[in-house]
Length: 473
View 1 (spheres, rainbow, N blue to C red):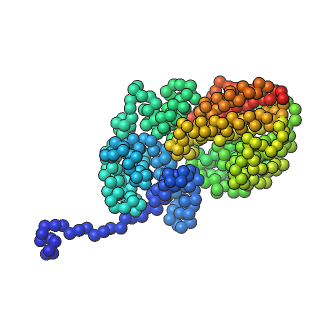
View 2 (view 1 turned 60 degrees about the vertical axis):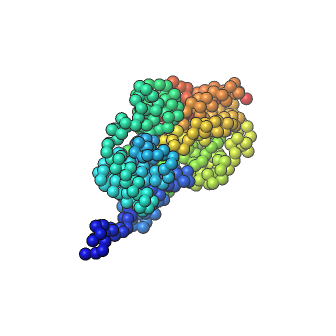
View 3 (view 1 turned 90 degrees about the vertical axis):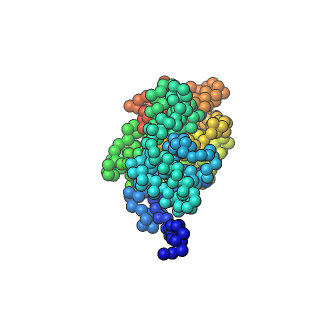
């Protein structure tokens, strides 16, 4: 008998190396990039997955799980933070961000997937041992065992205030949106509990990949040959891939004849292209063209009519992206790097002008779930001067009888109707065009004359569009 055993102490357990789980390590790495570098998951995740596949670590099921872990954790971060806060003995701001990321991954596996509880806890603790060390892994283990004591509905009943006492905070916790975003979206919808609940729930659903067949270069019939692909709901150029479909595997996408483009973005370009004009229709302008999706569709539509598109983008590297997307367009076009508030072209140079202005991006929370946690109410004030300046330049750039489209990927009233109303006070010789008839078959576009798309009503990003005709110089 050893000396240690004679004294009544158990022999120390031999050290066991933690098991490296490439799927969960990749998901953790993606979350850290989002947190540390303000990166977007939809930009960070694909190269990580590609590298993992090249190394032979991943198959299709691994990639699907890693994607679900990253996006699910980001989408439900607000709900999971409320649950985790109830399971720790300190404010969350005092918990190291890498630890919070691991806890979020664990909470999502426990509350948002069908992974068995014991497996979710075990796998997350092993991840913590690899990326955080044994000491903090014990903390993760203790917290997740508390989280595992109830399901999502049970936890929401505990941590969300009753709807009757605080409707906005209740919805914020239940649907994992910051309170100020809930309030802003509710105002934009115009009230009613059912609508806001449906919208917030739609923001937490993973959207299907939508392709655009660029006119004159590809057809929807070609894209529909892809396995389980189906036509878009509204745009004649849209095709939706099967869930988990890889656009890079589509030949037309690889060749630039088709691209990835939300159907709402396609509808904005189509509405501007279909707006009635007085006079010639030869020169079109995309004044905020980066990264190039709308510009490519506009350029192809212009080419069908013998018109030319000028695509202008302030940032040179983004202008380069636009040039790459437009390469091979069947008609004339030009791409320039220019400040849209101080344009190099003469006033009244264009027949049609689109300005899809920089904004908070609250209309694309399905695709960029981290944006909801990154944005602040003060961002609205930061964007407001630029949005108004770009619309003024667009109105100066269009000729009498021509049409301007003001678009944002945000339904926030401060970025949509407020901007248009303010600027048009300075331009009495303009009129709003009813944009709704320009999108035949698309329901629930609002009271007009502008249009607002919604994820829960249209299955698109929440794009806004106002069409303005210049009636005099």
